[in-house]
Image (cartoon, rainbow over all chains, first blue to last red; front, top):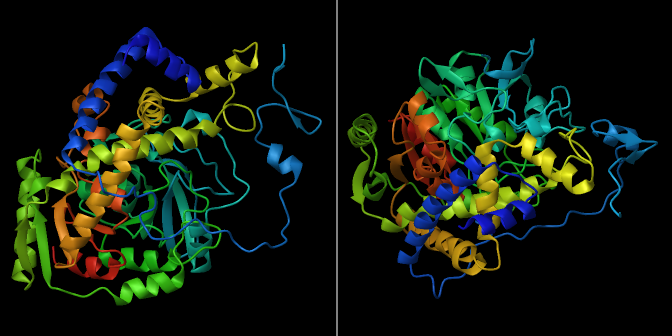
Length: 93
Length: 393
């Protein structure tokens, strides 16, 4: 992991790191890369991916009428609201 | 330092404690993170509703490490718990203190099993899909499982039975027909296999626990054999990839807009997102998010993430083949029964190594019981059999 690649990764994940944290993450990645490389010892060429550990698909439940939460309740934990809207800075400059 | 985020008096004779990964309507839920400090849910986890319907009361919420991915809660924003210099798992301490018949916890990366092993308690991580995850904080959804820690197998069984069963609100909840079919297919072989490949790196104390468990099983008429199953030893590396990738996706929802922490330091929307996440997430979590994101990148998806999913199948097939011939696989849950403060602070990425022992059950969804400081991993739906075996060790 190069510093520039890490900078891009941080940008994608909306995180900012100090120089010390960057060094720390780079050494963490080096450990994980070594760890990951060990998996090459297992031949998986003709093995199917296992997404679910149990043989089920994510099911869709039956439609049913229910009382939704009110806007007031949903916004009770919001950092900032105004007249029923969530507030954020201008998105378009 | 308290082991609780919140504790409440209860008049009910039957009480449980839950960890801070379960949504509750009468107490905040934080997942051990500054990001969710003071967060109040509008609904509660399905397992809590079921436990209440069965006459249980919730006596409190114990602390967890940030999003439950660490060793024993050392990354909790609200403080880690040490006894002397030894790191402790809050939910296990609550059970030891007698605050409830059991602790109901979310096993994301093995912390509950490490806590139970360290404290000499019994823990049950059921077959994936047998207990609803509706209303738990999602982290590594393909493997995390609602689990129980108690003083003994009887209490574990009782609490597990009260909360198990199909839940239409959880898309990964197993239908009752599949559970009944699976339970009926479990055959008692009276045989347990020690996995020698999983003994590497454990200290003498843990080795002695494995030897003692094998001896106890033997004395009680169980045949104990040793198997050198190399593929199982790759579960940790594969689970680290899958867990981090799923974690990265699941915590992407925390952006400081609709709920959770919002920075005061922003002038535009990008700064709001970035500064909120940067200020609220701990260092360990940030590293895990970045690693997870990297495994999902165009460059790495095939050679890392996809590979891990294929390795997952190899491990599951190999373990299933072993379990066709025996009741359980005996292996350590930890490398040491005490995590010293110096060790934890020196190597903050220890959870990524220590889960070498807990990942086989996490990545395969097989049930596992911790008792006598060791793990017994069984075939799908063999919880009853595992709890019976646990009484012998």
